[in-house]
Length: 272
Image (cartoon, rainbow, N blue to C red; front, top):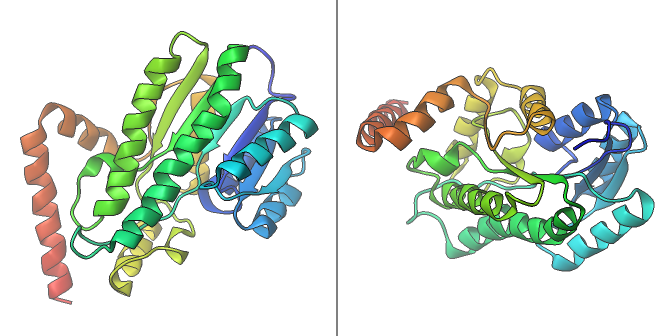
């Protein structure tokens, strides 16, 4: 993008808390105008009011095509074209394939995958027509970790990674950039809506979030830098970088490492 930060528009779904709110603050600090979209419009307004900078708060359900069209129209009317779309809204489901209900599978796929798909379909055509723009889809380390106990969530996030890879190729000659963000554990409010067979899943995730050493602000900085100097795969945690490479280059070795860790974790849980 050639124009300066002043006047640039970034739309962030799930912007009312966690990673989304941190991204809104980071872009606002650089002179961008954030559009904070969230199912909970009061949270969105709180973030927009906090950062100022002409930030716009909008209510939206990312699974609703009508909401996407409405939001696109409101942004175009009030601010202008969106320069960066960050498909951040998401939910989590814990449990194995057998433990996870079909209802919960549909819930997480509808929000975490189809919400991203509809967002891309809403804004990619305009970006292609203008010959500029950047789409950042928020996946997760879970999308390539292939770890047991997060089957539905990991599948949804893996699909986001695959879709983003193909979208990147489809838009490669258009001037539109695509990135996929794959953070590991970061302290957010994700567990508030998490569905799982029992509360032990939430407790483990909250513990891992607290101990990760990576904050939402750290992740927001990675995203901002990727817009300023475009990159596709955005890994935010040091250990995930070498695990990502191991899985690609030494898949059987990666699987053995994965299973050793999973079995140790299972023994610790059984031992209390």
